Length: 353
Ligand code: SAH
Image (cartoon, rainbow, N blue to C red; front, side, top):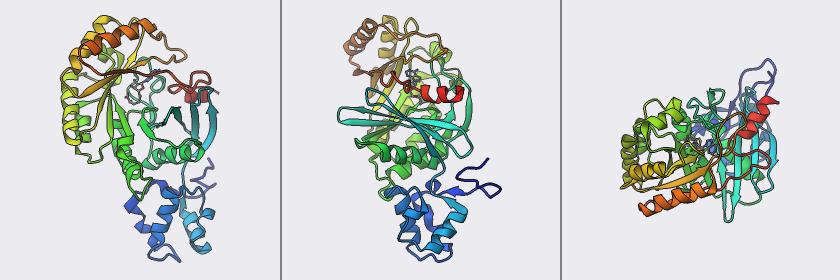
């Protein structure tokens, strides 16, 4: 296949977005390069968001030609932009090997949140989620993650304020690349985004959370809890393996102690599955005593999946039970449903053609 990274018959070219902020040194070996060339190129790629070598006007033409022979600036190509009436925008990117991923930007008052994918598909296959319906296809590289932010920044009228790893994929299954992407996003010589503006949402495996304790970057963590009972949770999240919510919350606590960063327990609420008073009390018991707020997320319908969003009265009842138990509880409003950009729908439609 011909693509930005693989001209017909040629070698695969690496994307500059995949380099770490301190990894541009190797470019000093290019013909016509000066000692400051790597810094200049890094600034073009991350700070100035250049899309082509032609934009890099402070580099000599021979140097730009040498760069272009073995590198591309970015590796993916924006294919479609779907704007919803409520301001939500779905961005569909074609990766160099033909796969597609989506990112979604969600304006809400002063906030403008970008929902980022970390894998093509997902191995966890949560019963209610569109991303895992075809399993996991591959991990995204750090550059492919960073590019989602670069592209969304370019296209957004309202500046982005928050970044959530809540698109396709389980971030802890691709932790090396996700961690590297967060390092680039937050580095002052990268995209310069405050770590506190980034949230990694995860199925919350105790061992994976421990790895996050080792990361010094103080991003936020959201745990996909969904239900306070281990057996019921395993049934909803087949790829999780064994659920051990007590150990998960304990590991999350360790991370909170290390970073002081807020923890959120996410609960996708499904009518008749986890929206009863009993479920609300179970949740309250599990998070009690932990520095953890609960975010109730009414299910976004996914074609072909046989669940129903909860009745508003059930959400109200759950909020009341949790709040009475002393648990800070918020409810997420569904967004982007009119053009089907809510929760992985855009990519699925694209795959079906
Ligand atoms: N794999 C990670 C991150 C991606 S999903 C995780 O599971 O946390 C981000 C959040 O969106 C998770 O809480 C997930 O359960 C939720 N989600 C997935 N499909 C959904 C849907 N159809 N409606 C509402 N929330 C959904």
